Length: 132
Image (cartoon, rainbow, N blue to C red; front, side, top):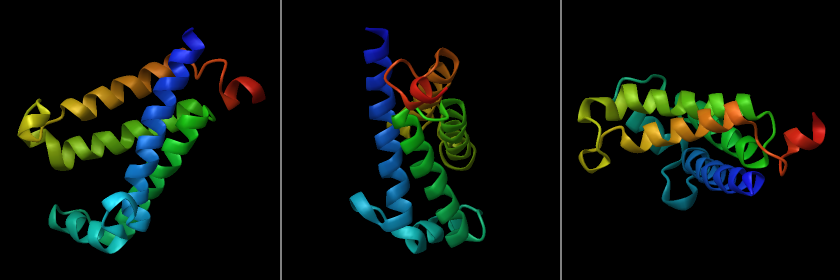
């Protein structure tokens, strides 16, 4: 049962992160692609915007796929945590805790889940388990 629970957590969070990164990289799922995301990033002081949008997209999409697969899980978790910490520092932190005010609530939950899986291991249904 533990392995199934970890699989569900990894799939939901990992595939959601992949989608979030694909919004930045390809404009999929209603995203703005590198140019649109880059413009937003420049507006909040992250430069060069397009390059950083691609880097953020790779971090999120790559980390999400690795996390979902349970491959290199500590590194995948670190990628998710890094993306969320940047979001907290640059966007959400000034808005307090609750997501209803644009705060950090959701980011903190994702960080907790990623760190929890990193410490517990990806579980039996993971590539880490099969390969290592």
